[in-house]
Length: 223
Image (cartoon, rainbow, N blue to C red):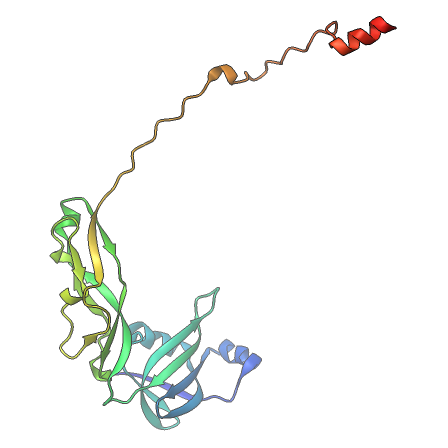
């Protein structure tokens, strides 16, 4: 089981900036039988565990001399640096089934892609599941070697889930499909009437100064 250490936090609001500058990460712990507890922990330690545990592996959190089993529930990231700036920990009861979202990892080689020029379309990238906390997988593997012909697809019901893990979405939902590569035909350029194209440098002829409008001629004659 993964492990993390945290301590109680009494710093809030604008003062959290100073906390982060010291390399610490603000956090909060809550759960069905837990009051919300503000915490802080070392940022680099959190990142190491988060990378391996994700948000579906149980972590043993040691805080103020007590051990709690938790999941990383939500991580807020800085919009510029993409660094974690706050994390929510969810305290789990080990004998209670919980729901979680786990990432899909695609493996294998599809003959339809390799030999028939198909394109693998990954319709889903994560799955909603439920299980006891200790039975939650870090990821779900999907073997695409089953895709042998164009338009072959893998449905949720085709995935080999761990024995104690139950998918929550419709079993007939598509996870991945091999589609035929469509090449758009190049359109022929539109025909152009070259008689209407003005040649660069060629000036339009000015009307003759002797030419007068009928109205002007009449005025001169009247004078």
